Image (cartoon, rainbow, N blue to C red; front, side, top):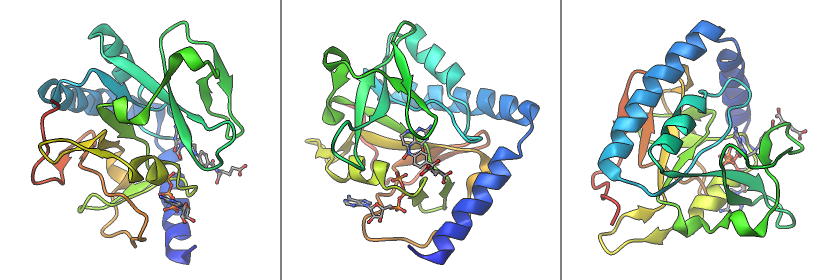
Amino acid sequence: MSVDRQLIRKQIRQIRRALSPEQQNLAEHQATAHMLSVLNTLGPKRVAIYLSHDGELNTNSLIAALWQQNIEVVLPRLHPFSQGNLQFYHYHRETPMVVNPYGIAEPKLDIQTLRSTDSIDVMITPLVAFDHQGNRMGMGKGFYDRTLAHRRVSAKGGKTPLAIGFAHTCQQVPSLPCEAWDIPLEMLITPEKIFDFSACVQHIE
Ligand SMILES: Nc1nc2c(c(=O)[nH]1)N(C=O)[C@@H](CNc1ccc(C(=O)N[C@@H](CCC(=O)O)C(=O)O)cc1)CN2
Ligand SMILES: Nc1ncnc2c1ncn2[C@@H]1O[C@H](COP(=O)(O)OP(=O)(O)OP(=O)(O)O)[C@@H](O)[C@H]1O
């Protein structure tokens, strides 16, 4: 792994963790409003999201708003035997949760609530750093790169699920050293800005 990547990851994670509760709160509310306006134009039925960890932009208000709008919310769970892969499970208020080895809560394994990745319309991805071209860098295990590597291409040429990053402004870096397996984002939302990296983001059919 390149030293550059490790260093960027370490520095941005430190900056993100140092945000005050007030800064986190304000960022959450501003970014949630932007995300809801984008989702409103896309009209997804099922959205994958994450439960915030390690200073990530908080998703609690966004999840509550999606529930209220009857948009199905799914969360990642580490695959029980296929190492390095994620599965996605329906998430509601009563979903039984367990804590994974990284200390992140995830839905308990229950085949009834498993949802296939290509049935997800929008995947809101956590990330550590991003650049102005939509390149993303995550926690360093390749979970989201593997998940997004085999996306379905719709009749209009859009990718399903559509990958939208959700991040603090301080997570932007001038340029990320790219690797062959990195999957760029179609869009990214910060508290200050809506980035659209795709010339032709398709509306969900
Ligand atoms: N909120 C959230 N959920 C998520 C992710 C994420 O980035 N954010 N993931 C996105 O992939 C997956 C989990 N991936 C992770 C990969 C590494 C570490 C991590 O903290 N590594 C530790 C060392 C842990 C160890 O090996 O004991 C570290 O460097 O601090 C955490 C999560 C699925 N769920
Ligand atoms: N599609 C893939 N198939 C197989 N291995 C992959 C794939 N994508 C990434 N990897 C492997 O995962 C490891 C971590 O990749 P990288 O550092 O880019 O992860 P990341 O972007 O930080 O994590 P994530 O995608 O989970 O947010 C690399 O060693 C890479 O070889």
